[in-house]
Length: 211
Image (cartoon, rainbow, N blue to C red; front, side, top):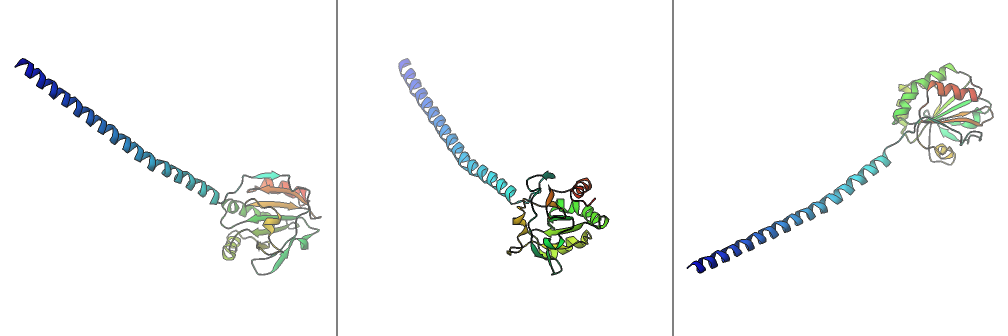
């Protein structure tokens, strides 16, 4: 009897151990399957998020910090002929012999809005200097609204893709706003990439004899 009891106990224990091992193995398999599924989901999701962030950064218009560059200074300012907001024609050549402040801007550009009141006031203060604005990648009605909002009294043209236009290409425009100070001989004496302050403007005017 004792031997039979021991045998039964041994068989039951063996079955219990085997059952436990099966359950443990099943648990491990289930956990591995879940981890594999999570990895399959997470990796593509992370890639999509990273690509989405990169695409958004590339498509968002960026305005550079205010810097004065020397790469174009000393060179003759490229001529252009563009249509103004009022439907007339304006070219840089017609202002030769006078100091010119050429400002590229856009109605959708935040920093352009920040500097516009100062430029508007400066155009009124320095009557001997020609201020000329070029709306880049903009719509006519929006550019007009921008002009009226900031009381810009100087000529403003719309950049276009014609052979006589494309001023943004001729000036290798990086972003907006950008401002060029052109002397009486038509030579660029100073270039500011990014929004300018009154101090920047006056420093530029000194280089072209406008102050």
